[in-house]
Image 1 (cartoon, rainbow, N blue to C red):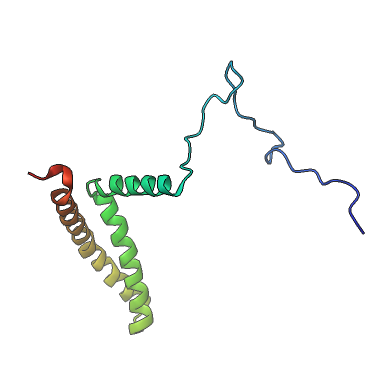
Image 2: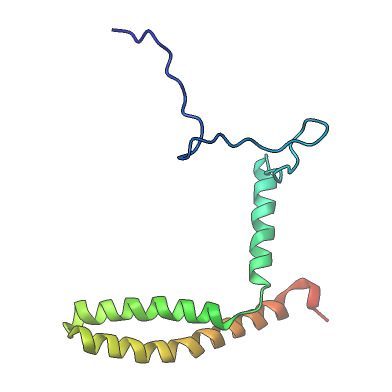
Length: 125
C-alpha cells in the first residue's frame, strides 16, 4: 500500500537545536566556504599544488617518531605471528627497533627533502 503522508526530514542536532548559518547585512552568508575546483583540470592543478606544498615542508622529529611507532608496531606483530615469540620479548624487540627507527626515519626524510630541494626548478643555479 502506498504511503499517504509525506515523511518529514529530521532537522536539528541531538539537543533539538536547528543551527543556521550567520548572514551579513546583504543577506548572504557571512563566511563563504572556499570554492571547490569544478573542472577536472582545476582539481588536478589543486592536487598538484597541495602535493608540492606537502613535499616542500622540511622533515620533523614528530613525523619521524609517528612513522617509526607504526613501523615498530607492525614489526612487533610480525615477530609474534611469524617467529612465535612471547609478547614481552616482542615488545622489547619492538621498543629497541623504535629507538633505531626514529633517527633512521628522520635522516631518510631529511635526505629526501634536501634532494627534492636541490632538484626543484626554483633553486637551480
